[in-house]
Image (cartoon, rainbow, N blue to C red; front, side, top):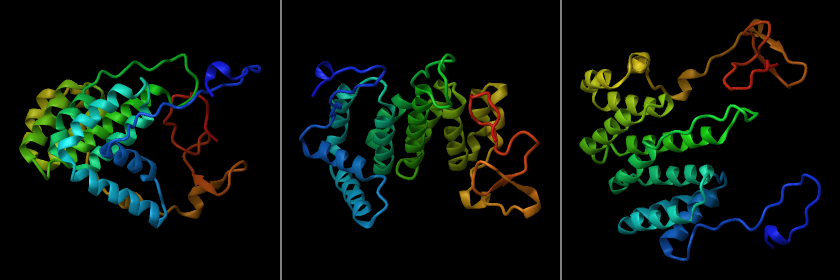
Length: 244
């Protein structure tokens, strides 16, 4: 059933058949199965995902052609799909994908639509896709150090967006601290503080909160850190309302 022959009623949102970007070729099927199972938490789903990744790694010569075909079929604005696809590309850790990852990372970021309501906007998801591409380049350092570092420097030089630049800068410094002076020349003054940022495992950020430092929240279960009299959690979104 398509959108054209679905009845309308009031302001109800009506959707047609979803676009299916994957074809019948084996490599496309493996990408499809990997994306379906990538969030699985049970043993069977996880095993399916790992088998797909292993099989895709063995089909290196078909990856670029398959990605080109998928790009032609993906509708504009399919950021969630793109993010999942780039997550899988990062898992493959194949240097042949480097040009594709660079092309994604250096895309021009659209200006945020200030007229839209809500915290998450399509432009934000686009940035997450590009960050994933940078993280995929980071994972290539252990396979082709020189080319991966050059690719990351190219991204830092061409991409002015802070959130996309940051993981690239950190990856370069961790792999080759002698590049700090080069990065200092590439970064504008208001972004050079990135040179001092350190990546740490999330476990290092766990902190016990003393009972005296929390307060109950009447509308939510549990308690939250006592930040100030108006807020109980950091304000990290663009919604200008108070958090309770």
